[in-house]
Amino acid sequence: MQKILSACLVSALALFAGAGYAADKEIAVIVKTVNSTFWQNVQKGATDASKEAAGYAMTFQGPASESAIADQVNMVENAVNRKVAGIVLAPSDPDALVPALKKAWEAKIPVVLIDSMLSDAGKRYYQSFLATDNEKAGELSAKALIDKVGKTGKIAIMSYVAGSGSEIGRVGGFTKYIKSNSQLEIVGTFYSQSQMATALNQTTDVLAAHPDLKGIFGANEPTAIGMGRALAQSGKAGRVTAVGFDGNQDLQNFVKDGTLEAIAVQGSYQMGYLGVQSIVKLLAKQPIPEFLDTGVVIVTKGNIDKPEAKNVLY
Image (cartoon, rainbow, N blue to C red; front, side, top):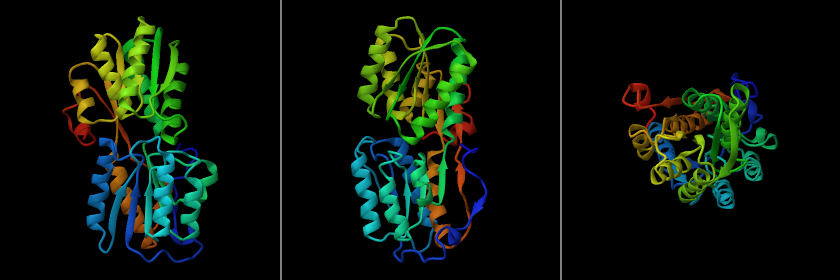
């Protein structure tokens, strides 16, 4: 990701060709869904940053599910229509949000992306991207799995929304590392649409279809929770090595009781905090990075109570 995105400082003034910003004082934070503790932790960060931003008010919204892409598009278009001061957006789809962000760009409304990227067609319409280096996070997750299961046997990937920016990097990085560093056979990639119950059912089916499965990766919060519950219900917890993603209380408990070997935890609070902070800087015509890696920590039973883990768990 860092090879694609320059870390050089960019100027809001240059990006907007000297044009003025929208006059209103609302910073709209629009995420993939409000029904996830991950995004609620993003909200905490955005709220704290808005308290420090004198003269600005933050609004927070997202669809009922990550797959409700049309609803998210409408939210962005509505924010543009009410002439917000800036938008912090976690796009659910790399292509579908481009036309809406073009409208923001035409309205001189600065945009900061968090968590997921847009396709190349949308690159000119936002000023900064704040996220986990998802490819690197996928690689770290794959390494944690290989370290436990070895380099031969069968594993499965339980993913979420096919084609979303974070999914492409995260699962792509995981898959690439597995193929480059082992002879593990990936028996399938399954997509839960970020629905815990779907992930539970899919994982149950995978475990039944492959009784010799050695490892499994759950690539986001609801998927990893469903995966963990399926392992527990099937009696496979601790027998099939599982690595999850994100760090809510359910996933922490799975690590503590051995259902999950590890979880890769993102700096979700930082995404919200730095996202709002970046918009405020843009509005003040201060330079900000084109890309900022908000980090990931591999949390295991061995470090879950240590500061490096506590700083990202939620």
